[in-house]
View 1 (cartoon, rainbow, N blue to C red):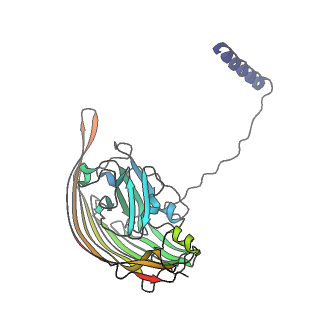
View 2: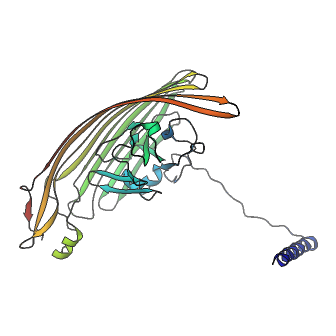
View 3: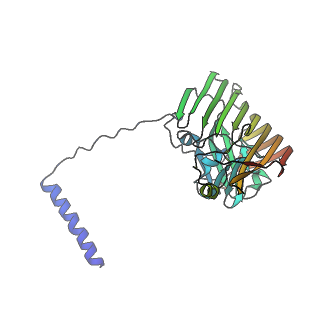
Length: 386
């Protein structure tokens, strides 16, 4: 087979050369237009990040011997997605499903929603819905990361990077409207006062209903931040505060089998007057970066986080005699308060033919939890499902 293949190639090459030599022609290719899109543009669907804060050592993604995935939030915001579980769902190795009380996220078979989710390097633990209204990107460091973060389940570490003050001006106001009376407004203003001071204010609010009757929600978030640098730019200080509130009437209806057996339309909801779920988050973060000497940098991140989730509602249900529906009842009041400090010292040095990045760190975190949960069978209620 080889001689015939080479022969055919030679014949084609000779023919092409002969045609070019005898006739001679020129071809005008169509022009190609290259249009740049700002990183802040709503149509921007993908941003190729070279590095990630989640690795904590200053190395690029290519230099890090672990899989790092960075998800640009704007792509998801274009489609109205706000919950972290919905954004992570569909990515390689990630199994995510939204629950009424928060996320249910597993990466490489390990659960990460309990203690492996961070916000700007501060552990964001506890049972709570995590809004992405003030998040620029989500970084995922897959695989074991205990050497960097201490306590970890081993599947991955997820870091939410907030929209914070910087020296690139941004002035944006947005609005949206969708099905089921859904509407929202947002604003993002980043102003550089001078080359040493910049301030930013990000806010977002939304409310709407569901295709199922009686289900509705309203969310509100506001986050001011500031950054200050010295004249030489080798010392910078950041401060940011975020308040996030999410209120909703939960859609915790009986199973599909109950609907089918009773012959009820799927659009019918079974929420009661006064049913609600509410999440509140107060998050304060400061960050100090200082170049102590050439290629020797110190980073200190302080975080104060207070999160609460309260709910009071009837849910699910089973059929009892007389085609009545008996619903369950639960009530919860939880408060989580966390104070964190993270010190990281990085040094870049050359040894023999290799360049090394050495990182030494100390993390301290104190968390206080106050869970209060009521579940009573005596409060179960029988209702007429029709």
